[in-house]
Image (cartoon, rainbow, N blue to C red; front, top):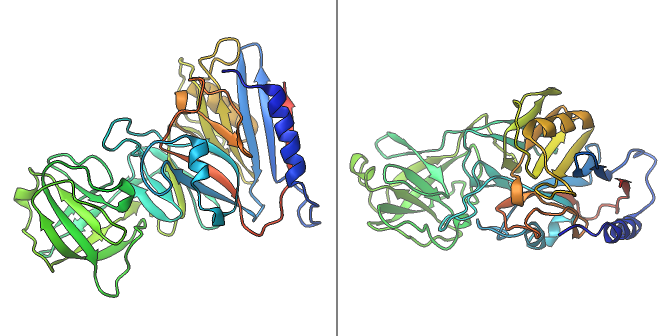
Length: 382
């Protein structure tokens, strides 16, 4: 499927008119600038969105496939599930790599925080997070998640993922209707009186009371409980629990992600301190990336696997392109058939599969409620 460029140009023009508003004297920059960059000699078809970081009316959010549940869904369907009180969706790009097989289909590879809720544990992989002021940071976040038992010993834990026989995993309602495990011991946990509780946040400690101990898997989840699943080869070495016992759950990370409202994983890192850090690569694929400098954030998506339209980029080519845009920092996101760029109601690129693939999550730019409608500038290199 090749994109209908006439339709796209008309759509952008109409949408630009529909959201245009007088600019205040205090804001003389561009709020966001869309550009379709074509390089026919290769060929490349590249979608670029340049977002003004100084505009307080914009926020970055991460999305989940099923709104508040892990799964797989198209980028545009994820946007449709966003709570309307967040504001007006402006643009979005696909996010992290993910598990493709049931029962944890859509489990993000690395960390995800959505509207402050911790969904997925960190993996030794580069990610990006945004603080409460919208400031982005890129780095490798390490999980220090653990449970402390009544006797003071601790055990590392995972979050909302496949639980192996020798491991422990904590499950929240975000995983779905149940833990989807088949064996082991599962501990249903409820809130300890007057203690902080759900939704789960990063870099916090929770005191939990044992409601039930089950000697089988697939425990039902709920909005007000946690389920700690212990593998059959792990349980032998742990203290036995009973109803009413108290344990502590830590969601600590290094570095700390305390009070971070938005985080998503990807990789590899492309640019750090304005220098290309990814090694040379030879294979071209569809790509997606996020980058930034002190003034702007950039969404970039490159079509691929479509001879005559766009062949895709290598990691090194993408890093060079992000550097050329002026990015001080840049992170590769999931690519291939997942690479999707959405703006103002429309998928703007030509996905390699001929349609938008179902994916686990994405990053979306939101115009806050009550904010003045902001102008968009569309620049095309056709």
